[in-house]
Picture: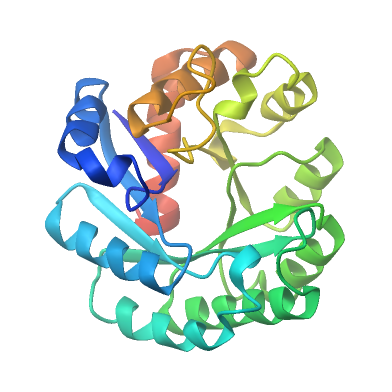
Length: 254
């Protein structure tokens, strides 16, 4: 049994044939999925999906790259959360200084607002961080005793990972760890304790080898699990069991 801790089922092409996507996941022993909202409309679709499908949970948020034009939408997320117990986190939120699609001050404001909503609703925060290590750490340090944080699709360096672990964060790895040029990232996978790790697809993006260039789907989280097992020299069953337990403890309080 495996859980895909981060996918975007409301995105094309997944949403266009969601029943087939879910059947493929089931046939690969993926028991549950966490689908992630990246804007207000996206988060409303996440709500519809989780209400329809028993084995899907949701998280709602405004992606950092969209914050400047959508700051007012953050306050509307709370009403969505209150309508469903299957909305189990806020995010993805965080900081992205690579694309510069939103003002830094707006990203920082949005990040803290998401955290405050998560604290008020007693759920974790799912973080996207790119080229923003220092500011990400600074904000987590401010709130880490009040909330729980998951760094999704980790692509940072080992020192960044160590500091996140010291603050109690969970770290999630995607199909990027299968890429030939990701040797540094595989070293991070080797270092991070399995008890502090989740696995994800970030589908429809980031298809693992050998499917690079094609649309990704939750079934491929099995490949991520296999790769983690190979890197850490443990069994596939250990990865599946541990990451599933971690997911349930982190999001569902066991």
